[in-house]
Image (cartoon, rainbow, N blue to C red; front, top):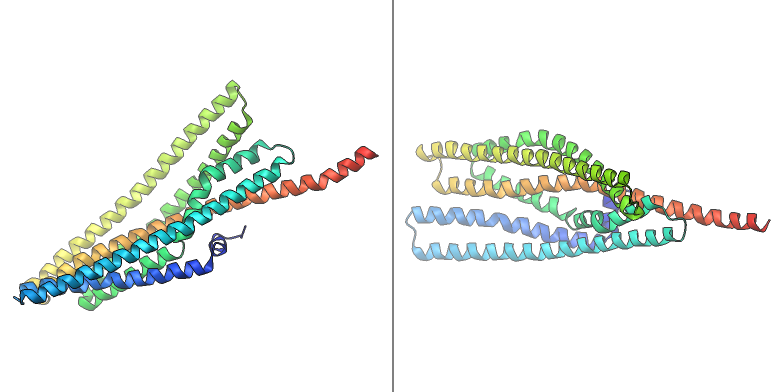
Length: 325
């Protein structure tokens, strides 16, 4: 297995990643156009434009939305397929390592680790392969495109919206690091649970140890939930402050005649367009950090399995020679 997570991503197919990235570019470019059409519809309606002109704009809006939706459908299916290909590869790799190790002395810990990889760990690592490159490209592209459009319409209002997101650059990495530490501990505990199940040791101490591990998993999961949902709460609060800024500043500009009502509506829609990709980008970053931890543990487990297998093969001829002597 490659040393890094992104080495594994490219192992699964560079040309697929290029194709997915191209679809992502089309999607974020198509996602900005409806904002301008929406603004023109509202301004045309408030200015008393002919209904036929408004209807043409509405049809153009529907066409753009349909294009965006179909492109996103294709992108999601493609990413899901490449992710499942990676999951299948990891599971087959773990099965192959398990088969090799079965030829030598049975190691309950190794079997428990391989069982955990096949059943649970491969799913999240392989699933990340499909979104590893296209997701940040798509969401960052939407942020840049929509942000540039908002700056073009009203720079001061765009600045007020941007300030809202700055604090998240500080607290998100810190809270995610805390989650990562708990995820690594959780994977280790789950592997010990699998090891104990493979050993089939039916003693009171073994049952008590398994019970302690289950309680440990419960505590770790609750700790992760608390950090994760606190992070979500803080991010949502920042977004609502952005809406408040648009209402306050936009209302002032409309009252003083410095901007049109359509611009304020476009900013409200624009903030929704920015909020979603920003949240998706944060989720991708969180998945990246967690998946890097999981991938490293899977790679180390497979490397250890291969090393043990090679050591057993090396020792077997020596043992046979000793028996002959």
